[in-house]
Every structure is written in structure tokens, then in C-alpha cells.
Amino acid sequence: MTSLLNLIPTNRTFLPTHGLFDRFFEDWDMPSLFNVNAEWAPAFDILENEKEYVITAELPGIDIKDVDITLSEGVLSVKGEKKQEKEDKGEDYHMIERHYGSFHRSFRLSGKVEADKIDANYKDGLLKLTLPKAEGSQTTKIKVK
Image (tube, rainbow, N blue to C red; front, side):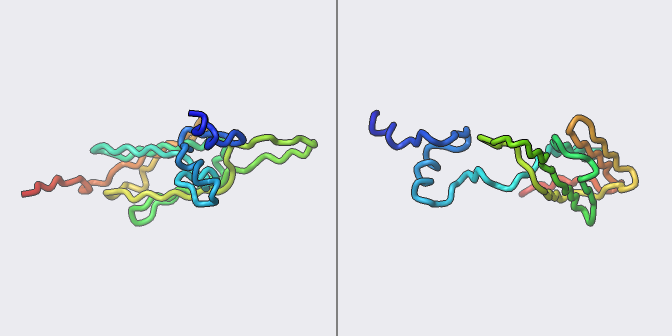
């Protein structure tokens, strides 16, 4: 057990997704399976029912004016930027875990949407898009023989 403890670095912050396997290979300057410095992208939930698509995105700390939403040829694109607050008061950061920067997410919808009836709301850091399905864009179940 003592030899195993010597393999675990004591000067690193451990994340739940950042396992022993990745930390072992970090010492050899090999790429990690879980990139801690990966580009930031907000989390999205996509729900589909027989009438509509409902897409919810977590955009905490983002001004809705910095978000651009487009629908083109069945592809919904959401892009924006989370800007970092700049304060120069001689403060020293010991750790920064919040993510900043631009993001761009695109989703292909499986059916046509009534573009003139799309509803978009933003409240408390949550963007909710409701996209009603167009008539005749129903999903057909295919039976495999």
C-alpha cells in the first residue's frame, strides 16, 4: 500500500473525472483522456415530443445580448461568449475554476420546425427554446424484418 501512495502526486487538484490512470500518464507528458483545460461549452438538455422540441441551456453569468441563436436547414446553432470580469486591485488568484470564453454548439433536428412560432426565454441563467414541429414532420417507425 505504501508503494501505491508514492505514485499519487500530492501537489495536484483531483477532479472526480480525473482518475488515477490519467494522473499516472500526466507525469510522462502524454495527452490525458480527460482534458482539464478543454474549451468551455454550456450544458444543453434536448427534449422531443410529438408536438415540439424543447431545448434548455445553462448559461450562468452570460448576458443574453452575447448569445446568438440561428436555425438554418434543420440545424439549430447557439453561440455566445462568457466574459471574464476584470478587476485589477492587486488580488492574487490561487485557483480559477470558472470557465470563460466563447462557445458554439449546433444540433441537427430530426424534423421541420415552424420557425415563426419559436419561443425563446432567458431567466436565471437558463435559456429555454421551444420549437414547434411543422405539420407533416412526424417520425415514422420502421420495422426491421
